[in-house]
Image (cartoon, rainbow, N blue to C red; front, top):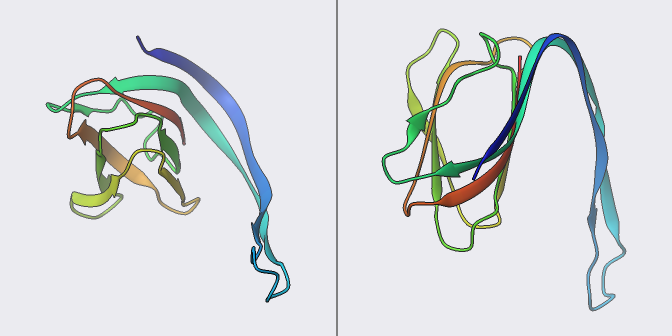
Length: 132
């Protein structure tokens, strides 16, 4: 089962947060890195969950270019491969995402014009957001 929600029209995308690093031995002081606020107005987005298989699929991008991609591999066994075409570039394998792994891409100046996704096993579940 997969869920997809699509929107069109003005979409404001924002991200804020921090990374925290804590030494469990207490030897080093905790460290944190603030993620600078990322905000951009885009024209469309899609988000939800999808099932990825060995044969893979060409993703339907919400806009051309698509400037934001977030995906989490929520399966316990399949490795998800992302291949995309950057605007003005050639198709390239970007990442092999292990179970539990997350990929986040944001490029307000250019983005991607094509995306294909496949997995090492059938029925690999991913959670995703695409916007452009």
